[in-house]
Image (tube, rainbow, N blue to C red):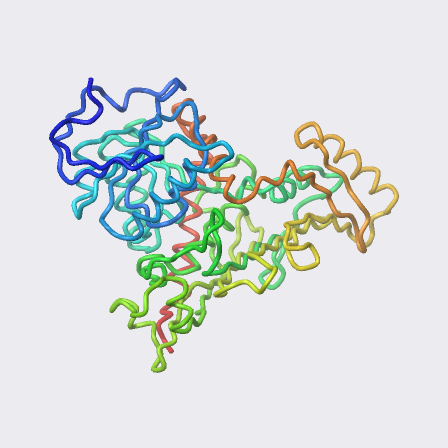
Length: 473
């Protein structure tokens, strides 16, 4: 059987293998959606409208269960070219190069073309978030599983459509899953693990509005390097109607971690949560900064409503949510700056407050911008006895995470993590894919995963509504 029909127009690019299609009448010769049993090549990826670099990071590694031929459907433009260039970088690197073959359809009818051809059984989507809920809904209607970058919804009006997509997927035996990469960061894993040792952590505090039991704060930067190259953002990234405000975007990760850490493998339903307080605010970007990060010197019309009289762009990327889950107070906070100071990077802070100790992740200059976990025992705890209990917990965790140790620091102990367990953010996408492939082989998601995805987005949507109209400057 010929791989490429004669009537297709195509272009080969070496050393990578890329075919650009302008027109075709692709006829499926086999059912691409047969039940996946873990066989080699049984997963066939479709990438739709890859406007965010996370779409390419899914392909930074190879997987035996995934066919090397990947079909891409997208409009023409620099976002598609950036995506293909990253895939090509992965295939030409010296260490462990990939062997992906990209078949690319470029055209304004990219979604309709994908749905009519259905050349795979898993759609990967990471890009313009305003379209994402519609993509997900359309894919499951067509019988295609979905692996989506966060957020899956940015507008409360679209939340019912996301709910409907999950309902359709359940009826059809399909999977919808989002890329919760932060679950694979080792200090977050260990924060969760140590909270499961009563002799170390005690019981979870309930907290209060002004002193939550668990807080997660992250600082990000618009201008950064990805896979060793400066990241170029599309202009729509700065439009909250397309990218989503910060309170519904990056906050998704932090809300997810609170549910995942505090209620491990437990379904948390919407009626068990309440958004108590929410706010959002803007980061100002100059015209020079905008050009530096987008490569464009002119603002598109849709960004006009965010511009001041002196052409400063207000990007509503910052947000804070305080909410309760089963009467436990949690807080998430997201801040975006334009560029990290020299020698610094994105940062994360997290604290879980227990009756015997606080588990704290810090990632500042003192930690050389490396996430570091600290165990800070309560004042009333006997230090000598507690240290022995902490050592016991570390010994038990070493069976899963070899090389863990502790060292004394003012106020408690630092958990020393060996370099082998610090794989880095980009590698977390491969770990998410491995998890998703296992779910595909199982034929279903764990119940708590499905329930908590919808609850997580319920929280961010309620927070967005509570925070009110942001375009007021």
